[in-house]
Image 1: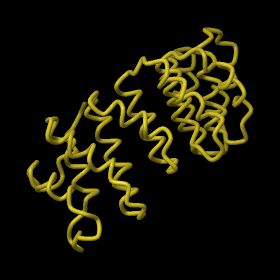
Image 2 (image 1 turned 180 degrees about the vertical axis):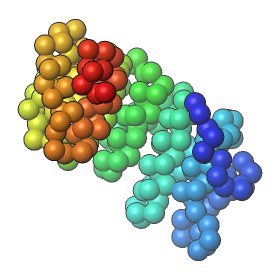
Image 3 (image 1 turned 90 degrees about the vertical axis):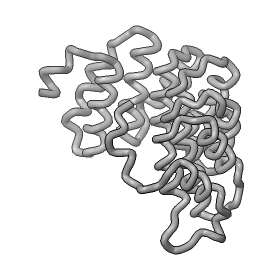
Image 4 (image 1 turned 120 degrees about the vertical axis):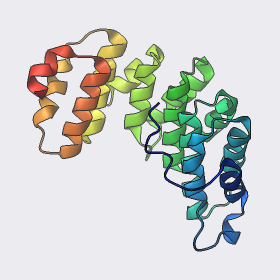
Length: 215
């Protein structure tokens, strides 16, 4: 992992952990637990991982703490912290959709193969208000074929990035690439997020036939 731009804060590991462990209501104006959670990606140690896990388990409902928890889950994923596997699994049921999304992404970074976790992830596709694109990507990345039909139901989603991701995932999981023409068509969509998402989907699918269209 390229970390050239992660080390932007003049904090030691010990200082960052101490800041992250500080209760949210005691944080001063010039301090940030979010910064600490971001900075700890530079320290792949047991102490860092345990501190990040403690922060995820801090369930203060304030928005500031929710944002810190999301970042801690992301940092644990970047560190590929297998020690946090059960934490990520628990976060799949979190009421905060962004924490759920980060937990799904983190499980993808680790490369989880536990069928119970994968099924819980797939069931999120039926949860209203959830962010589906990352879930679709991760299920395809982890080759979880039992999710195929649930993903297929999203190929006509109103949100273009979700529809594009669903089509790509169906192709990858089924090995039937007949939908890729519709995926490539998103390169010309009026929605910039659809175009960006399409490029990422084509990369993930290694669909080299689209190179002339991208160029």
